[in-house]
Image (cartoon, rainbow, N blue to C red; front, top):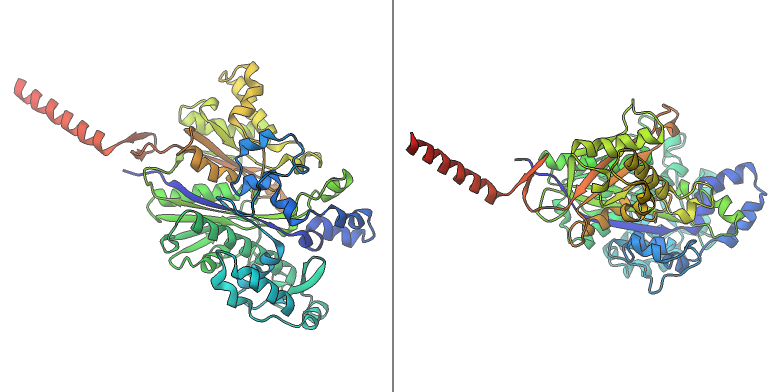
Length: 513
């Protein structure tokens, strides 16, 4: 009898990277090239938040698990001008790491000596990393550091990418090849950021859930960056590289790409691998994207706001064989945006939400919570993109009315009852369904929910290979503690009872004969 896989634990991290906004965010680097004297670039430094403000920010506290999504409803929008009392760097899911420590982490995960750090900076971060609960043993990898003059030389003569902290040059990322564009310093910088932030999330997954890292069999990395060289531009393998950093010595792995939808694709893949018995413990992990730092910065500055896209995001989730307690992943209730689905909002929501529900004989209102594109509206509304989660919930509710599963007068309350305010950073793949997995595990075990849906959506047209959208979804349910099959659940005790009953019936039949 085949058992559904379960979500066993998660880790969520944010990294405050104020200098990387200016030097590595695509909006800012493009502006420097096309309009170097722009007013936006001049005003930018006044709109950068200090680390304390980033820690005290409501959506960030939700992301690492110190507040619940529902807690955000207590605060009037905008949220950026309100500090959360008792906010903390560390949360039950992970942490908000400051930039200097993250630069040190980039050096620690660097396997080819491409990251060069200044001697003075190295001495300072060594002390800080000695106090980090998860990285004490990795401090020797920082070595002694380099002379700043040598770092400047790498930048000027070999096109190395500078690493900055508090406006000062503190290191660089070297290129790994003279002419290969896939191994230039810019690409390697982005890839080392993914590796470091992914490893940070993975370490928290292991630490926060008391997982034996040796038990992890397979890793799926699902960010948006491409790792490879001129012969295989996106060949990989971030998954194995991150597994090595965290000490998952018995794991292999591969990368899954699907723009923003990739993490939900990865969740379904992990569930299928575990359910099929190929692996017992599959971890999915994704690091952050420097390109998206300050993506909507121009609109934020124009409106006199701080730049809210000042953090990298990362997460890691463990999917394991059924333990009788953790929430199950219903692989028989998977939604998919197929090639023939079409791109109208109704067609997209039908394919991702109602088609899998129909398969399970469920109504829209049978799902207690929908986790859609959980972008933080503080970021998207001033940029003219509206409240993305709310728009998704309204579409689901409208479909519920059309299907006679919801009264028209309940449209307003549906968003509050079955939805959540958005809290995830606009890091592309990071908001798409998966930020809720940590809370979902609690809501479906110690909480009072029975069924949730994780929805990931993506924009395949960004690659200029197709005009198609993308999306997948999966239902998660409270574990009944019974052996599960696709479409039915029955306990061992019930099986014994049924056999005994059948034997009695058979004996009775023989006596009558």
